[in-house]
Length: 322
Image (tube, one colour):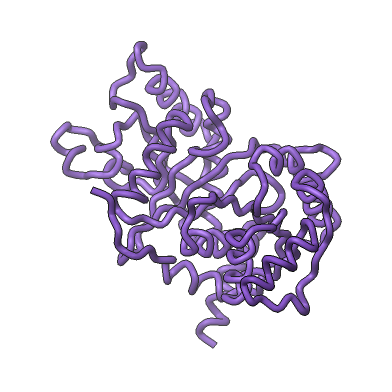
């Protein structure tokens, strides 16, 4: 049942990211070949300008093994992963970098440094993660959130998660994303708390809490992705069968869902942490190079579009047509 076809970094994503200048990116503790090769690949594609933060001797040793000449690449020594996370975040705080890329460092160590109030990277939003899922041969993307950070989010947490994902898609050029708030049923049921959360979130969206999006739920997975399934069940709305964002009930359900797409469908799962002052490229040890490259492309697009997305996209389009 496993899909063994080659993975793809979406061509449309790379094309969009290449419209912009490389983003200066701190790579936290790239002391193994996987993380260092990912940074090199993103640099070669013109997506990032890396600053490598970690044990300098180990970085140089791994770079030599990879055949990567580090001449012109900035290195900042840090003794261990905690020190690397603190040093890398400090560089961002000082305005010397505009994105963060996870290297060989535990996620909780990295996020602890990001959330340190002294670092100045926190915003009014809760941190959340979004997977930008694509299937080879298709330009359609489906976002899954949150499958990495928020384990058992409540309604207000889900409000932050949804807002982060909506703003993320705005930066990518989707002006009115359709959000399906998932549950195990399309009916509100006291026995299924996620359906109650979904109904409450839809009410908050109707009151203006999630501008620039269409938010509907609760929706079972089949109704969110299949117009036929929704029609058979008599479910009307603008989201059924057309969802851009799947807001999952909890981390476990999102984790199962994205991995099913990766291993059964050959999907590429590009991922970012949102809600901080800069995009955070969060990759897994099991991620293929294509997913890592796609994640860097996302970070570039988000960085260049998050402040003035309409103006930035217009300028990028002008450069392409010039």
